[in-house]
Image (cartoon, rainbow, N blue to C red; front, side, top):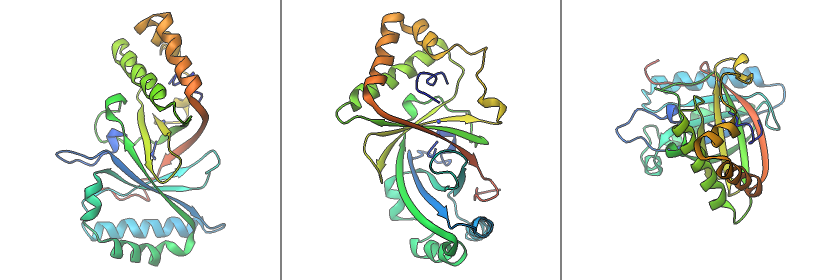
Length: 254
């Protein structure tokens, strides 16, 4: 969805605060592996992922391991496998050693994987409007913004103001912002928009359009300034849809 619509309205996904593990001080780091199954091996790959989830349950792993499937865009067919709500320091003392985890992955999944790319994103809770509780929506609409070099402050100031406007006007839409911190091109921001059905992708006539919401909050001049900052700072924008796969995920206590 174009930013003019976010913006009439997502992720990591890759990706949301509602996805953070229950901790006293949950981290904001989302570690994702983008796993592309080999051609013709999707059934075997998914069976392996179910085995991997069962193994984590046997190990009493305290951390979720969440899986999404990419349904649209250039990455269609790629699975995102994520550790959520982490601090960098958590990776120094994982509940399951990296060696044991990799060995089990190679045993039940690795044969069917064509490629793996690891990326780390930081969730931005101060400018997000998350769903309440620990909620995994059925679908996540992902909008990826590639910001021009030297324009990061302009883009960030614009999305800061968008959050302020949404709070001021009590805009009812939920959304989550992430920024890529390692594993790809710098200046990459990800917006994740939750949907619980395909019908929920339809425009909502009872929700004030993005530009009207900005105008109500700040007036026409500031609304134009915010959208201009977005237009001039974004070099490229792409979108895709992710589907949460609870059958392939490991969630402690379930």
